[in-house]
Length: 279
Image (cartoon, rainbow, N blue to C red; front, side):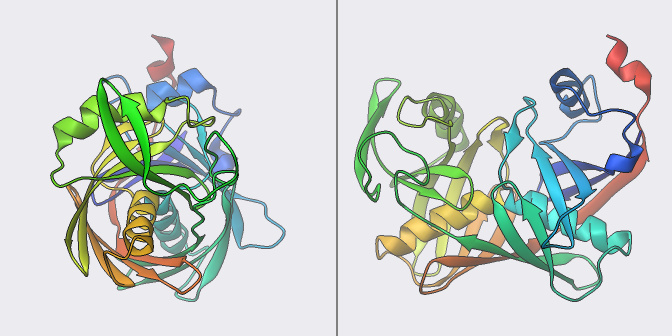
């Protein structure tokens, strides 16, 4: 089975063409491929290009635990670069269909940078979803692991829980991220961002990603955290999101539509051996 591997600020994905799959991947196969010791190792798998009626192609995104993700900003940048590398797409803007909605992408700088129109952020509970009556989920209380947090929730095609804090760390994300991901408030689980405001144009986040765990960078998390910070009046519309893996640029329009720009790096291409699945 052929594969391509890329990373976007340390958030790495394996891309597989569905035509190279002898049969659909099982949950156990996905877990094995993504395993850092027993497989190729990645933060997820991108299956595409798939047929689409209203886009250049469709994309399926799988987390390392085998669950399907609706949308991934870094995954979309990587997949866009992959389409560019294989000459399926050029330098013009093109559309990709995901389970979380249609996005538009542009590859430039010789493939090393990708801009994605991520769609519109919503803070409404019934769209995210968040338990309880329909409302914008802003500055609500949530308890996990014996600690109470103030959180905001958002969706950009996938669910996010953003926790503004005066100080954040990887240890904090690792400790409370898994508890918040599976909190009863979130029927479909959630991605979690621990947010620190640096100034009107810069924020920093630590990320616990649904189905993947602690993550060095995330495009959809950057979009959600920046949108929450802007919604609360703490930052302007053009924001640099600083993460352990690097920086993503986010532009927020008046209706909270998001344009994300960031780098992509090709790591490898090769062939997986079936022996990997025999253990």
